Length: 154
Image (cartoon, rainbow, N blue to C red; front, side, top):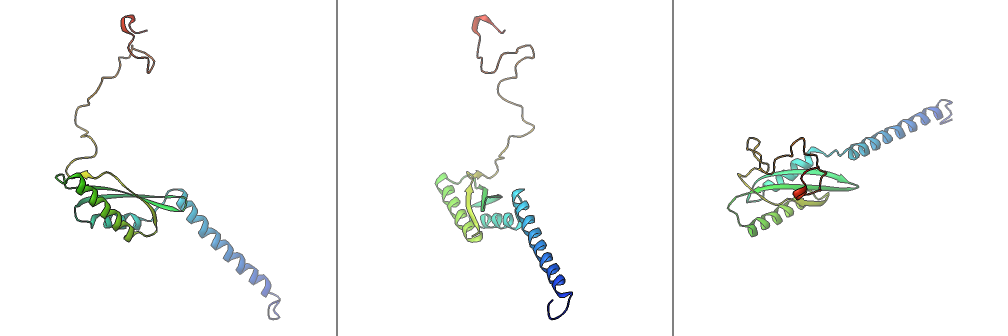
């Protein structure tokens, strides 16, 4: 009976219950978001902007994920194709420093090997395939069985 009112205790109990439910919902939503691999889009934008601000970086692509309580950021950057490897490494170190300043909450950075601008990271989809042709349908050798020599296929 708060302040002499008989309805005071039930109202206070409902207010506390509502607060507990609200906090539980917020925490559960945050945890499920992280477990599902959710990242704030601002982190990706900030990482790409930080990497792109470094002289020598033509383009940068960022990925991020949570590993436990650690935010891991991966940067894939493109540099001038005529840049020597030593200078490309120095650019990578400058990118790491820029990321550390821009994203202090990130606990880990992974910088991919710098790519040369103008070169595609994936083969041209229209290019002919190279390598060994697949085995004919009737040739049912076990994988790893190697060449059977004079005995021929089974």
